[in-house]
Length: 548
Picture 1 (cartoon, rainbow, N blue to C red):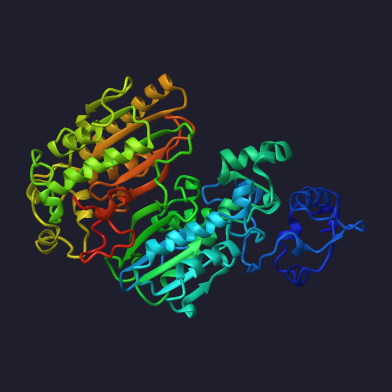
Picture 2 (picture 1 turned 45 degrees about the vertical axis):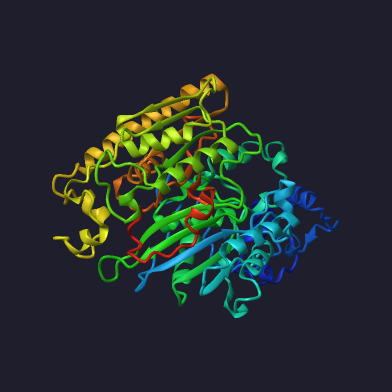
């Protein structure tokens, strides 16, 4: 192919060329030259008059030559252009992986698209965010810290790791770099539409089919991130810290759980946000591990803080603790009251919501423990002109049958089926006598979710772009709500954890009828000294994803 036949960005991706890896100059065709002219303008670089350019001036990061270029006819292909995602490796022992996004960078602050470029550095705010994360994680005994090679992530990792830990346990993995965005790297976001028109709109509205410089960046990222799990889970030790970037952390969470690239931007990752994944050995030899997302995007600031922006959102609140939940037992009866701790938790939830969000409606399940939690939360909002509180039958707890009031440990010992089967799978297979059928539970909670969406839509219609519905439910019901929001089937039940008194936030940037974006999952910092530590290790089986 002659230089004039090249496509914009080819000078970034011919990675099998020795000249490319060394950064030797090459000849640019007219299309490539125009693309380079735009990029050089963003980056403040000059273009030599002879048409030659050192490619390393544009992209200061080392890559392994492993990316497979997507085919242009693959936009509707369910295999995403021939790309693949790698399965999770088998593990022998349980492992916990804590993901952290880097602190605010200079290009975050300036509103520039970074991609896998390495020009930006942490701002003073970013340094402070990293220090807060260090304090939050200092009590955890990580065995190793794996980080992206890019400066903003490497520096964040160094701050969090601190001087007290072994510096030899810091490991850089190139594939943890941020998403490769080719011509978009360095672009000021406010100039995106002006310079790239419909291509930029595609990036914003349909990123999985976004094509730039002959590449589908999101599809490439999913393949690359899925391949990282072999390196991460292959590390010695049971507690692993990973410090990387927004998009790649999204892809790591998604590929661990089993989400495709269409879930890009559905699992928010804020600067220095912490996400926690637990992996436990599979049920059979050579089977992939079970995965539970314990936390998503735990940030130093409240997930309800919106900087004055209008938000359309649903806040999932798990009712306060009860006597049975504190003893790790299934609910005993609909009339079980809150424990003193549960009453305190509910009051603190209300105070946190009052300080950080304008709530239009509270909806709860019919049981005493959910209605009492809702009542305590509502105390600060009563008297507001547009506030309402109501009960929804579809939000009632699962009927546990013979498991009612029993401990999860006793249930596991008494199991008549596969001894390695998770209790969540027992429920899905309807193996519990006198219990509600799981199919019925899933169907009614889906109806409940539709009702909540319609209510939010009505509130939004009355308040413009602003609307907030707080849903006070049970751990299992809230997990079902999240699955319905993300269009997941019941096979994903058990992949998400909800602790008593926790807050989970789902935003709807395109309105209540649009797709939900999970801003955070299982946030408990508002409970102060009663909060669940971000990196808490369970003494019981980590696959018990909900504490009822």
